Image 1 (cartoon, rainbow, N blue to C red):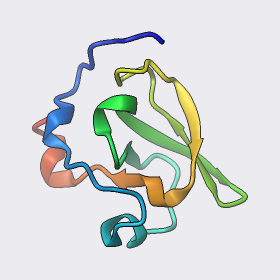
Image 2 (spheres, rainbow, N blue to C red):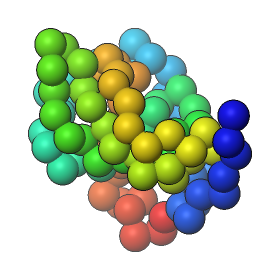
Image 3 (cartoon, helix red, strand yellow):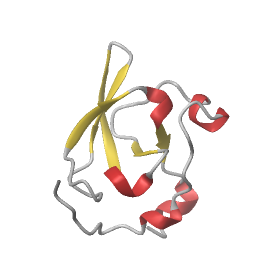
Image 4 (cartoon, rainbow, N blue to C red):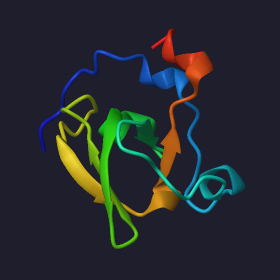
Amino acid sequence: MKRTVSPYRLELLPAIPAFHRRARRLMDFDHGQLVYYGPMPTYYGIGEVRATVNGFVSVDFRGTGQFGVHEDMFRPEYLILVPSSTMNLL
């Protein structure tokens, strides 16, 4: 497993478990939105929504997290929008 140092301050993103009410609030993601993996933001980093396919969301993380993942598919309840109030701090 490749470990990388993120260019973002991921510790500022709150960990939100899957199926938490905040994770279920927005089920439709649009192309280009910035999201993170709610349960552990540092694992994947910050990613851009590429597409939704059969209930899954394709996210391009560009290797910004500890795992160095570039692209992955998630169920929507695992993804959280990056808050606009936090964006300029990251």
